[in-house]
Length: 138
Image (cartoon, one colour):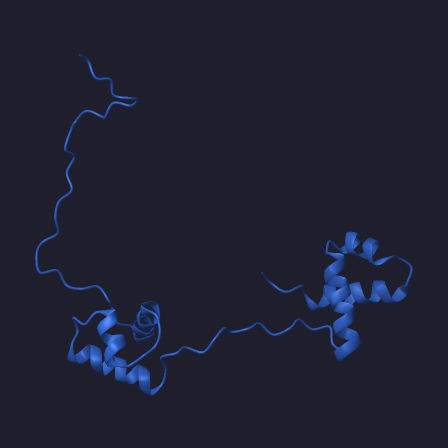
């Protein structure tokens, strides 16, 4: 979800400062919530700013820098290693998806090569299965 524009923020604050309308009326006129207006005014009161807050970037990757290089070296040594094996060899306390995401960041594929051709899936019957409850005669 995008942050509201600076222009909208300025107009809402000016309308609230004018004092001719309640916050509910200002919210209705500009199509925003009264809770957002309260937060905007509180932020201006506390910091003097009405700019949107910076977006969070999430936690730092557990496997980065030298660990990422070590992971790449391990994969080059043993390309058939499973995620669990790679995690064990690197002595990481993390879930398998963390190792997988590190491989994605390295641009490495985790798909194993097939030793046999893929199996064919064929329809076993040309007639659809009957629906309902099976009744036993006799």
